[in-house]
Length: 292
Image 1 (tube, helix red, strand yellow):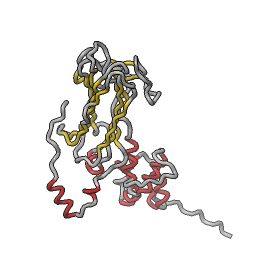
Image 2 (cartoon, one colour):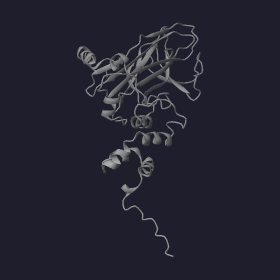
Image 3 (tube, one colour):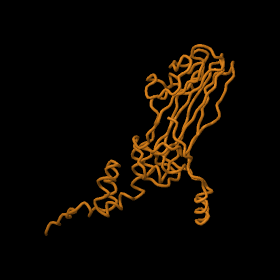
Image 4 (cartoon, helix red, strand yellow):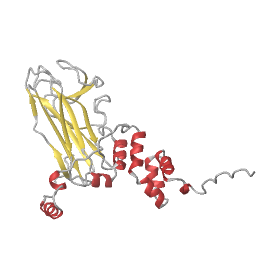
């Protein structure tokens, strides 16, 4: 009786079942998949474009859990945005002194770094935050200019998907001294024109306040295409004009690019003809040069 012939091994990787090929690609680094593997042939391109592959990679890298039930518009974009997601501001909690911050205005006795809770202060809600920046009796402002392309966000992703941009800051006053705090954030184009901004009114806290830490938060969504830079600027001064560092304290600032996006229902749900007319009538982005 003749022995059975062993099954012949595939002559080419492309002869593997699609689910096996997909399993192999799940373990290939994402950028190599797009740069090196996807252009090889139409089969590889089609497998790499499968949303299930990118969902599997999100699960493998811990971006989602097995019981994830939230809708995701595009798993590939979700994967890259989650892999890039971090605080884009450097040294947000003063652990490295004034490193990475541009001093724009330095009045009174200038900026200073102090340890929490500080004189007449309170503990920060997050115990991992140990320090803060503090201002003086004349206006003190500092800023960071974030280059999104240099941080890994490519132009097509920024202009086509336009993920939500979440900005947060924390400030507090000394209990024994009033202060005025301000925050301004600008989204700007490659040539530094302002495309969107968040400029809330200045906040004044009176003397003999509770010294509690307060959070300011804003989400940029459905902003114009072309954003390449984010300018974050904050600071303030005390209201008593006391020598020393009695102005607002700031720490734990952040800029985070979300893996989600929010669209204006009025523009996304309008009939095609109406939407086109609205786009024609819409004002162009404010042609104001970024104040840097």
